[in-house]
Amino acid sequence: MAQRLPPGQYSTLDFPVLSAEPTPALPHQSWRLTIQSSDHRAYSLDWSAFRDLPHQDVITDIHCVTRWSKFDTRWRGVPFDDLLAVLPWPPDAYVMAHCYGGYTTNVPLADLTDGKAWLADTFDGEPLAPEHGGPVRLLVPHLYFWKSAKWVRRLRFMPADTPGFWEERGYHIYGDPWREQRYS
Ligand SMILES: Nc1nc2c(c(=O)[nH]1)N[C@H]1C(S)=C(S)[C@@H](COP(=O)(O)O)O[C@H]1N2
Ligand SMILES: [Mo]
Image (cartoon, rainbow, N blue to C red):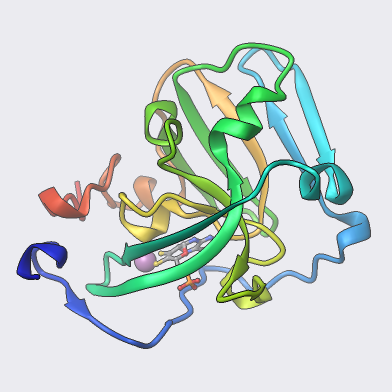
């Protein structure tokens, strides 16, 4: 199974917490997810609208740029495709994920569609813990885990790729672990 571990990574059973900001308190009644088009149209979901979207179980490996990988992590969440399906307008080619707390990260739309990404609200059968991004985080497991934005608040479509928080600080604009795209 050597090919299961991307170059320069080691496998761990731990689930380290890596956050650039303090864990925000996000009660369900005040939580919102807003999708924003590049021409400033907005579509918001409250908790009950989000909960009513189709959910899917996911078992996947995750890879952090700090070199830990964790195999067979068990999530449940809304496939990004099902979120796109409820949007009243067409998406743009790039997405900036904005988080409660201010963190941002950029991902091309093509890396979020066709079953490649989820808005996860469950880990190991339990509501996603606040320190791991609960109530909802982005899960984009084929890219380094910094792209999996915790406490996601707003998904802003953009016509061009623009660096987010870590990407502005030297992390790779794309972040493919199999090509070791750690830093730019
Ligand atoms: N909002 C937010 N999301 C974030 C981060 C962060 O600092 N803030 N860190 C990223 C990084 S670098 C990693 S490795 C993972 C860590 O997720 P975990 O704490 O659940 O292991 O979250 C990513 N998403
Ligand atoms: Mo990370």
